[in-house]
Image (cartoon, rainbow, N blue to C red; front, side, top):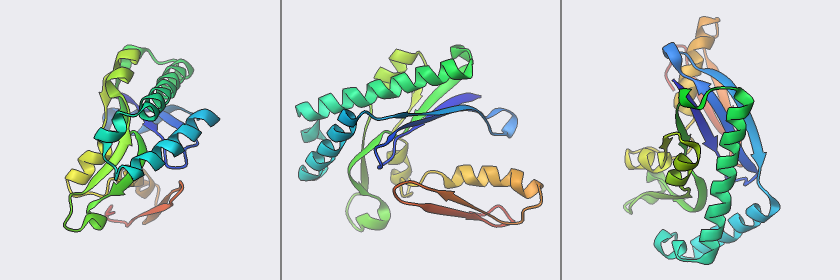
Length: 198
């Protein structure tokens, strides 16, 4: 199964994309690229983040503003351009791509179970999955962070389960324990021992 993953982190530097084949229980990256945010989009993202925080992360209020609509369109457009460029670079037929996965761009507050206490955990991202699906002709899997939080996870990082899968290949090469560093504006470590436990 071939999929495309899109990631846009808190650093607001751009869209990172990878096309990966998950066939036969193995993970093989086919192609990847990064498309930088324009200075305009980064500026709008920072302004939107501030506005959403002023609204106490009430996305219903934020959605009604011109800044939200403008920023969402710019973000969605760069995601669509990134997907098209990646498909072209990889040389893989569009009909062979099963899905695009996107968590969205973090905006406002991130309130996972470890922080929420007795309040309702939540996270705030913006994205337009239907627009991306229509533009590319590929199904889009989205709201990944919210799903993780509502099932007791932290919503970020989402990488440890991928690290666990990758570690199996390293154990076969003789490594008893491995450590992965997921670097971004906040670094995360995943340590996998020789029993493949995260």
